[in-house]
Length: 571
Image (cartoon, rainbow, N blue to C red; front, side, top):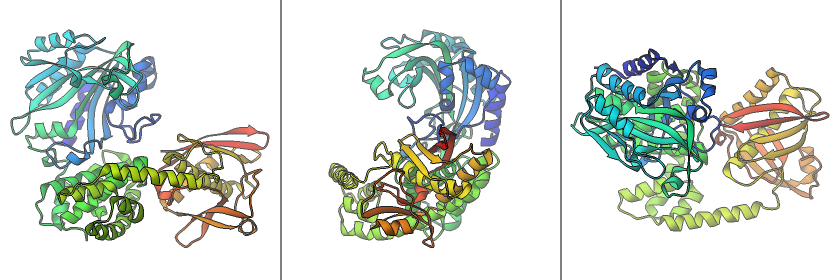
């Protein structure tokens, strides 16, 4: 029986022998693609090559690549616990940017499934055609020539993409095999990227977007390792494969419960959290950080369902790390950070859970639970469903919208410092801006003063007084200091005080600004109350630096005589 490691190796070697460059998995946080939070498919790191295929030869030495890609999808998070759904999974894929077409792609898949894995193909699908996209008669013909008897025509389900708000897309052919229970399951999807969509899939399906024919046919295939493994190993569930053996063994050390759904959710969510954090995501109140926070909090709750709340999640996380550290180097390199972040988040949420559960049992309004007790609405909904209670989500959303509107109105008039808006991403970058100024002063000297800033949802920019180019060592040190302060999860506090008192404390001022007698000062403090940053500022900011994610300095350059400029992002 083939193991997960053997299948990974066999897949990569099969395509390497057929002229494909083996490309490592990209990060779970997509580089240069702000339209999605996480990498959801193997093709994401290769998106630019479908529109610029000539770059592939320069970057990979050829037109064909193969990879095993880390992926996260949370759209079906409520389905996790059944036989097939996961939030983290690995995607096997082979890709071509003008190197070959349908015949080679389909033949490779046919041969790998039948000759390498020893599986039988139940049936395949092909696109029936719609609008400007014709019926895929070529794929149908190829499958017939390969001897597949059951070939089925299908519609929108076999047209794939784009990922995010735009990108390559096209008709697909799907391959189905029988699982251990005799059901036909899709194990491989071969996409023929012939078109480019300038809008999302939702708009495409509504007829609100048009397709542009690409000059070069691109091949994009995807085969989920976990689902394939269950088929090869003849298991009824992806959770019965060797990928989960060790973590279920660790769970069973702490509980006698045989609640399969709870055990599966706990195992899946801890595994996902390990991979997210190792790629630089930290728990937070927005974006990727919030997704991670939700996953960890669900894991904690289902650990309680299994009556193992006395066991810290990092014990299970360590088992996951041991399973994958020889496959993904970042897992090994960031082991300490992963365990620390999980332990810290569990400690915080245990307090929230204790207070929030008491209020939930009293029937407290979900809006109050969320805003006063920090109790996530998703958790309230899940608990209510278990008790047969219906939550009025529309009422909750209305109250939250009004709450956010009032918060923004309250901070209007204090809105300075070059912020483009009050969106969560901008707010995070605003806090990172404060950390960056403090780090610059630590590395370059206290004489460094801010001379201007601009902060959007995508990046921050700071101009500061300094009379020379920074060295690579100085830039690296500044970046490291900011990330260190993020990992320490420092508290961000706003205090109003007399302007003269703030000046005596050494609070940094915005260059050229006029301040009233009473000012707002933001402090970023360590656990002993020592301020590592203090600035005249109207906000808004996050409450803890741990919400920011990973800080990356992108560029350092001259702005004007005696003034340097830095651009940076949060990953």
